[in-house]
Amino acid sequence: MRRLRRNNDKDMLDQMQRMFEEMQQVGRNIVPGGHVPIDIREENGEIIVSADLPGIDKEEISLTADENKLEIMAESKEEIKEENEKYLRRERSQRMYNRSIEWPRKIDPDSVKASYEDGVLKVKAEIENSNGRNIDIS
Image (cartoon, rainbow, N blue to C red; front, side, top):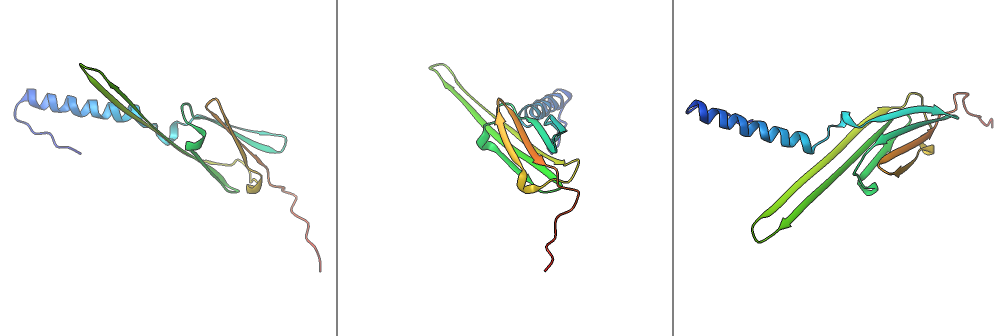
């Protein structure tokens, strides 16, 4: 963090204004992990998670799942460059998503399937059979 130097009141106010503007810019460009809107529902023996990831390409999404949790990670970078005789404009933005979700019930990790369409990620997983498994006797 930067220290404020107090030469005079106007200088200090200018420094505070610059710091405030920098903090606003960071807040605009990075979406913290807790702000990924999700819906979780159970339907026909499956858990279905829907997550809103607008403006993210499918190739920028990474999913990891085990029997207890699902982790969604995505990162998108964009750069806009405009040049003209009188001006040069260059803007950069970055969006990062990282959300870990505990399954409401144990699932079969091998059954997890995902699809992505119109900015909505859908992840489906079969609920693990709670009746146990068959054991062969030798």
